[in-house]
Image (tube, rainbow, N blue to C red; front, side, top):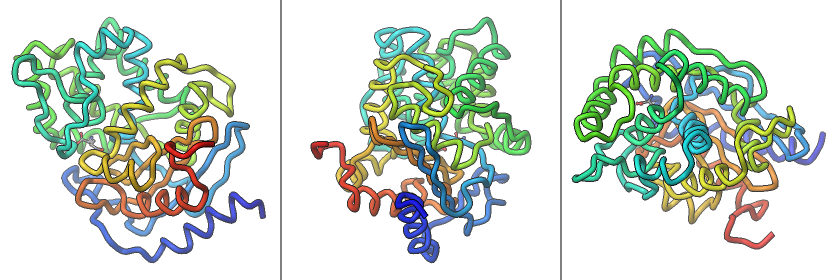
Length: 307
Ligand code: GLN
């Protein structure tokens, strides 16, 4: 067995018994996830894929979609235009907080719900159908295969998403949302319900680590400067109110989601993804945080280390 797969297997073995955290249940369909599912995947800049555990179990992408849609908005509108609408400061608040600037209604950053909803509205399109079509095409290009929507998760999310609707209406009333609140939040629910596996997320993370070029398909999905900005925002804001601790302990740009997915990118080296549904108090998957902590220390991955 190659040494990378061996290390992934070892991390998987050691952390399978970790039983902390709670599976998210505020979206009813997420509560049906198996807390024991645990998969790891890593994709190198040469496009080689390494896996351990359940790297092929499908789940909804949730907030792990946020950096990719931010990168799409950046490539559509340019950084200055996007920054006018969505800030780049860590909020230090939970993912669903009402982190809006008092005067302008501008959300703190694109990695929390308010900022992600505003970012979804920035994607260039003639209407909501085309906007979602472009988002799905972008996520698919990052993954290197056609992705689809988990309709049950979408229905569950739409039925219980009043807090996200409230965020959209607040931004709309402050003039900081570029499209209608109902259509935007509906597109955002669909975006969160896109079905992926840890294997897919590792390719997506590797595409970020590779300057926007998918290392498996060779397709340049977004331009490198937009990827650098996306990774910078992930580094400071990707782990919600756990972002500061994460940057110290692990030191890689990352993004987590409530369904238990997490990606991390080691620039010019690899992308890695973990799937494990139980979450800690910040909403980050417990086994994924532990796995990346171990890997970062073992292989000296912290971005503040020299090469
Ligand atoms: N769809 C979820 C929500 O908006 C995404 C949140 C997350 O993954 N942290 O509540």
